[in-house]
Length: 161
Image (tube, rainbow, N blue to C red; front, top):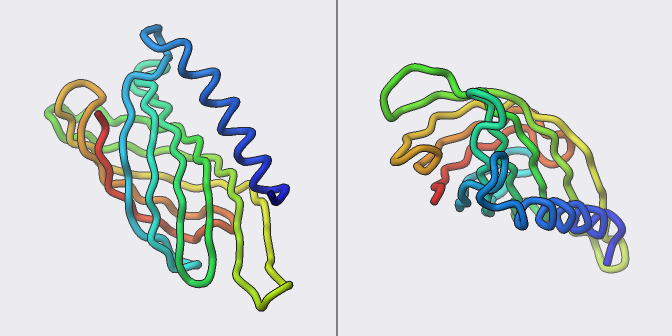
């Protein structure tokens, strides 16, 4: 297993082990969801899941995600650690914005014997809209700008249960 992927999987394992035993407590996992979309540079289809920790402080949500992107002769596995400020507008539709730290394992296809693997730490600006069904559960449309070597821009849709 390549070193970058090992580091990313270790970070994910530590994240999961810290979050799951605390379920039901303040700041613990409030829900989970699925997400899918497209990314630019490299041009990819992405899919994955996220965990919702609800509001850590009023209106500031932590909703990390793990996504796999494929396309443009590249595979990207990204753990995203975002902070979303939810704008109080009233009603079921809620805009949010913030930033995210990205830990990415990037595997670029090359001729046999010349595969290029990379581990990257990047940042992205995040903005989105969430249509809430009940509390933190609902549908989302999210846009990321930036992202280091993982991507230049990304648009995803998702659902939180």
